[in-house]
Image (cartoon, rainbow, N blue to C red; front, side, top):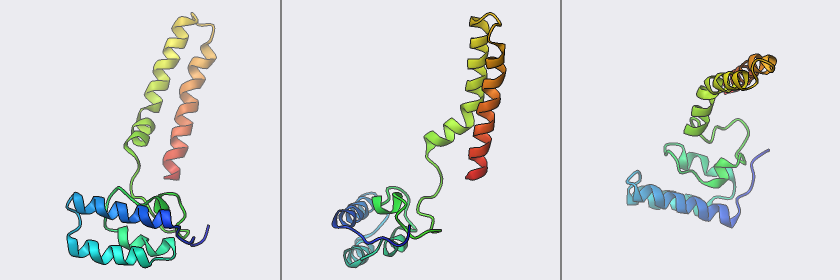
Length: 130
């Protein structure tokens, strides 16, 4: 996508995120002053990356939207919901398959067998990508 130019709204969002980090005690007032000066002077999204590298969420929206330079990681980890769904997708599919099998009295046996296999394959592909 390249190195996108920052909008005023994205710059303001980055300043708001820095304020949040001061409120939570992750940044002291001197660090806040230095970083806000750099955010205010920033012209491109890539200039924000080093200012937030050592900070956890929240992150400025410009870094979360994938507008940063290619190959530069902007988020670490995965969301708790995504992790839960990836880990629990196969057991949930198995339970659903058993319910389908019982309710259909065996007539939908193919769905009961295929559903967990498809879900397991999808969950496996997602794990390999990340």
